[in-house]
Amino acid sequence: MPPSDISPLLEAVDVYKSFPKAGGAVDVLRGVDFTLAAGEAVAVVGPSGAGKSTLLNLLGALDEPTGGEIKHDGRLLRPEVATDVTHWRRHIVGFVFQYHFLLPDFTAHENLLVPVRLVREPGPDDRARADELLAAMGLSDRASHLPGELSGGEQQRVAVARAFMNRPKAVLADEPFGNLDRGKGSRLSDLLFQLRDREGTALVIVTHDPDLAGRADRVLELDDGRLRPVAAATTSGDGFDEV
Ligand SMILES: Nc1ncnc2c1ncn2[C@@H]1O[C@H](COP(=O)(O)OP(=O)(O)OP(=O)(O)O)[C@@H](O)[C@H]1O
Ligand SMILES: [Mg+2]
Image 1 (cartoon, rainbow, N blue to C red):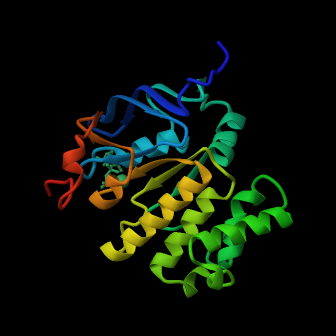
Image 2 (image 1 turned 90 degrees about the vertical axis):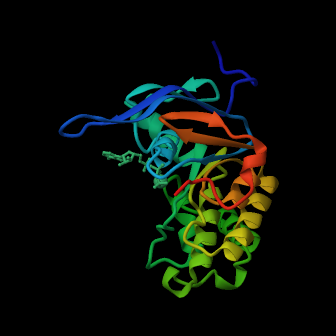
């Protein structure tokens, strides 16, 4: 059947993930079903070790499920086909990790062009887009700074801008502002959602921060290897973890 408009942007169908270990496998995901509509923002919460990063890595094709399927626009991601995986990582999804992973010898502006260089030699339009994204992140006056010449919050803002550079359909963010204090994190959450609103990009955000999760259209909790909806009332307060 051809992909149709009603297919979700991203879909995980009965996904399992185990890590083989001496003495018995670690079964992290045990039948996860997940759908992400175009432009939708979903937060994923859950205790430490629940498998949130594992799930994000599967959605981003950074790792392969042990069982089940990952689909984009109704089409199956075939992890064994390198071109499928490369296309997925370069054009469908953008990543924001907890640690920024900026290239230390490249300026902020040059770091934004890195995802473009994976696809083509950057042209004037790409440079203009990098400038525009840095401006959207309030970093116009930091474009020529190396990562080591930026504050932690500024580094994360560059990382967020970089994730949007190739106009992905979805940005996957793993604790994007987890290292920052609450005030800074809240400001960056504003900028992230402004960018999302402007570009129409879908978001999957793994977070322990109730403020950030509360901005999402839906909040899901990963626990015992499964994903479940969280009632809206529990998305405010001091946190999601019992710890
Ligand atoms: N490569 C691996 N080999 C074996 N076990 C692993 C591997 N990667 C992750 N795990 C285990 O899988 C479980 C889930 O890990 P994951 O990093 O997805 O948790 P998380 O929900 O992101 O936790 P946190 O909130 O602390 O970041 C953990 O118990 C972890 O020890
Ligand atoms: Mg994690």
